[in-house]
Image (cartoon, rainbow, N blue to C red):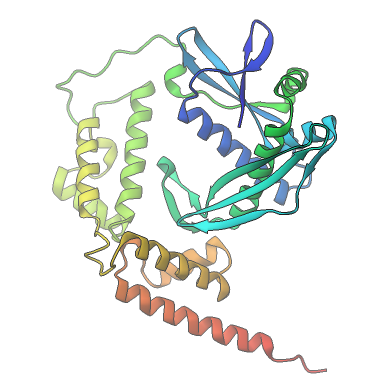
Length: 338
């Protein structure tokens, strides 16, 4: 996918190295637009996204074209054909899609490819246990977008984007460190745990606390268990009382508490992921077809995170849900009385 930037009032393809954070921010924003298209009839069209990045010349806006922008470009240019010969397949935790797109004027066909996680991405870009029901649509939409942008003239695209109404380009928020406020004094190295932090420092601490909470779930223990553990380990009631050094140390300890796939009885990490995938797929087929229903099911079983389940326990759950699915299918097959 091509990205653009403003050079002396003229939009041109960006030639430098694009930070991963910019790509992820633009992709995440485009995913949200796809979801809105599926759920909101009155959703505003967003044709492109603008994300600020730091360069040697200063801060520049990186502009990425979204799914709606690609469709609009195809409509404006004309003679662009999206083939129905779409290919999609699951590999691990991702769905990969390939969409052939042809520029009929130049008689050139290129493949638009894209990958999309099958699970909802949570804090810290970690995959959660929640299946993303829109993952297939997102993968196809992104692949089609990439295909259109591949066969269209880059010069023409730049002209079209440069003439877009600013309302059609969504400005994404910059990282806290890009702020122009005067830097605040850092807390001394000898600061006591719990010393107040501000600005970028507080944001960093907040993200660390979130990451610890996410990683703790993978131990299979509850939030109350974590609070008891941190009270024993650090003598504090909340993580907000801990310094950055202590939080980093805590994160390392929490990860060490997570059971490995071998300790849980799996032959490999791939087997563990596949069984967890099969389990969630069965849940949906057995009537637990929303995230809320899945969460309620896991809560009733006192399951904090399926990554902490042993192979034997996961097998039992799969068998149990399979029976529920069978009962549901049997009930649905009974004809209604006339």
